[in-house]
Amino acid sequence: MKFLYKTTLVTSALLTCLPAVQAEEPLTTSANVALTSDYVYRGKTQTDEGIAIQGGFDIFHESGIYVGTWASNVNFLEDSSIAPEDRANMEVDVYVGLSGVLTEELSYDVKIGQYMYPGASSDLEYDLTEFNLTLTYAMPQGTEIGLVYDYSPDFGGLDNAHHYLLSMDHPLSNGLGIGGYVAQQNIDEGDDYFYYGMSVSFPIANLDASLAYSNTDLDNAGDFGADDRVFFTLSKSF
Image (tube, rainbow, N blue to C red; front, top):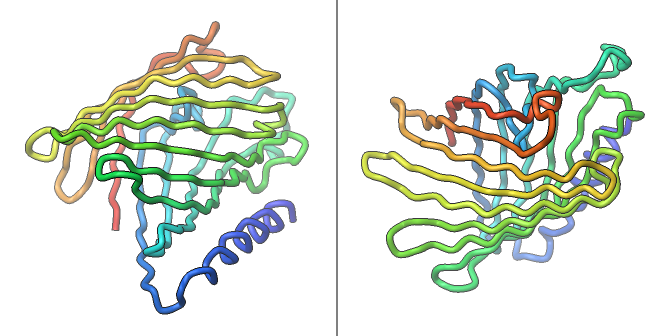
C-alpha cells in the first residue's frame, strides 16, 4: 500500500503540471534498457557486486516539462538481522522535471524524484524523496561540464542529505567518449564521504557500452560495498 500510495501521489503531481500547457503541443517519448555488471550508485554497489537489469521510460513536452520512471533490481548489503522477506529486491523511481536553456552554452534541469523499494519492510526506511538541480555547460570543442546538487530531507531514514557532483565528458572520434567526476555525499546523521570515478564509452554493434571505475574515501569501504571497482554496462535508448 505504501508503494502504491507514493506512486499515485507522485504521478498525480506530474499530471497536474501538464494542463498548464496547450493540449495540442506535441509530446515525445523515450525509453532505455541496460545490463550492467554492477549497479553502482554514488560509489556504492546496490547489487552486492552482482548483475543488474535496468530500464526507464520518459515523456517530454516541448515546454521542457517531463515525467518518467526507472527501475532496477537491487541486493543491498543487509546483515542477518533482516529477514529475507523484508529485504529490498527492486528499486522503482518516479520523477517530474523541467529542463531548458539559459544561454547557447548553458542548460538546466530541475527535478523531484521518489525512490521506492516495493516489498521491502517499511521499518527499513529505504524510500526517499530527492530534489535535484543540474547545470550543464557545453564548450565549443564538445566537452560538457556538469554541476549537480541534490537534497533529500529524509535520506534512507536519516536526516537531511546534500550531494554535490562535478563532472566532465568529452567525445572522441568513432563514437568513443571519456568522462570523469568527483562528488561529495553529506548526511546529517550518517557518514559523509567523497567519491570519484571515470569511464570510457564506445559503441558495440547498435548498443552503447561503457567501462567505468569508481572509488570512495570511506573507512572500511569494503564493508559498505564502496571500495574501488570496475564495471561494464551495455545500454540501448529508443
